[in-house]
Length: 219
Length: 223
Image: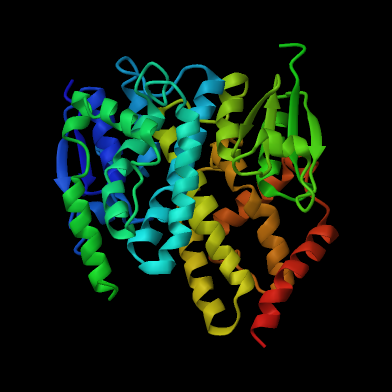
């Protein structure tokens, strides 16, 4: 039975990237539609009237919104291949907690760095470094956040890793120097086929942030 | 399952803590309450939630689970009687979406109405109404968001039933009026009538006093 799966997305989006990785992990064929966020298409506005944001997964005509909710949906529907969430309730709760932590702590702190300059970047840098320290602690000696297997938290964090280069460039600091374990983790994840074509292009992200800085008059 | 230690760390007023009370009572789970004073957090709270240092925290057989919506999913996965989340994956995704919408967009718009004044308050009311309309739409053909009985979304949005009324009383302004939101008003009444909900509201006068105090600095700022 051919199931229609459509993804409304933007290639640089770390949130859309999560969904692309999940779909690839499960081997799901889908139609990709690149959105122009300055001129949002009718389909996007119809499918996500509440937030008008990407990513939106449309499965058999029905929309699912919010990236982590979409990934959880994909995991529940295509449950026979590459499970992303653990089946044990406690482990599952831990994964949901850490993915929520990533959602709350990384992107916004990063934005405080690349949308500011000089001293004003300090609060964002401090927050980001503290959050990464906690994440590295959680990773510990495991190959993935999911343990032996690539999982939900790995999917949640990895696309944001592609944005670190922009944070480092405009924040004039090094994340990689402080977090060797995270670097090793990211390298390990990037060897996966599902991840190869699903991550935001880090040079593209840099250009995007530069444009943002120019518009804000700080570059 | 006997001999399971279930403890809930919460405050007397937090709607996020109340959600967990409702879920536990709905499923008939025995538990012990630990009331926290957020101005003087217990060492146990800090030990069980070192990252966010917040309530609620559910402790099950010595293991902590934090973040109220995560706790609700944990409870549903662990005690399978009287499911809170729907069975169908699409409905589950919709339920999670609405809960998140309630906690983020809706809550912040209601809060803006409470703390702002004048023109800013008028604009905030407009935003709040737009957000409430989404809930009104969702209730079409249903008594509860969960259908005939309360479920995940009812529990997640339950804060609206108690808190909005308190805020409306303080600012002397009706946000959820019956003409605009007939289904939502009916839901609020039906939800409040459910026995496990009715028996667990925080004391009305204490809530008024609390939120009057919270509003003070915002009023002072505008003078």
